Length: 288
Image (cartoon, rainbow, N blue to C red; front, side, top):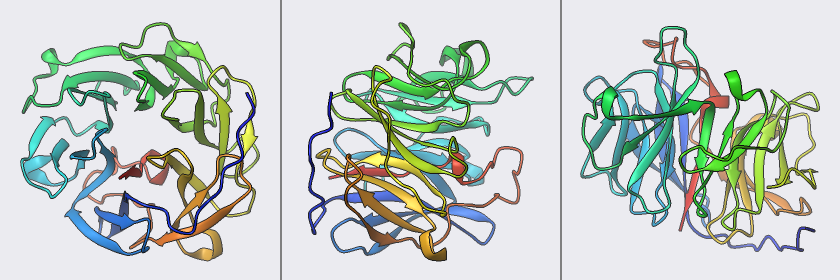
């Protein structure tokens, strides 16, 4: 189906959580899409994901006492450490907020695997977490579909599946494709790829048709996420030599910088370089 004409209004709304690297670790910030101002949220944290209501946020905590996947309320209270393996990363919420899906390289061969765990279960034992299959960078959409980057027996490229990772459908077959994010109606998928030389943002229909390249510049563009109303896509870019969050319409016709980031999303946490793989395994998340 054709992408409808969209207008990138001058006043986007909502909060975009994003990571910024400095002093050997990541910190999380909340950027205001309307004003462009950023507010510090948490030290030693990255890979944020708001739940559907925007009331809680999951993220990777790099701090010793909370190392693993942590969830808190939007103001930082009510901490729940739902997984404490240092290899676990990139959490994403089920639409009802009860379950968190994440990816890990905790196995001995460092294979990329997807797991589910309960969102309210503190210190979940590994045996109580549900193994779903091989893959990376999961993104759980509002229609209960999961987009992810295929690995291992699932081949390469982007896949779409049910919440339990059944009924897997191939969307793309390029290993350069990663960081997928589903539109609220589940009909489109935005992602980042180096298929044309450097990291750019692309949009594709959920059936694998209608590929559109949304950015085309020498800068690095990546980590796309949809606005809550679906009228815009935010992504990080170092256009002009400065890392910032930009917004683009789903047809690629309009784009502009909306938030100057507090730092670069690129870095290696000094005490855990084995599990700190740089900006391409980071995330930003947009909530009302």
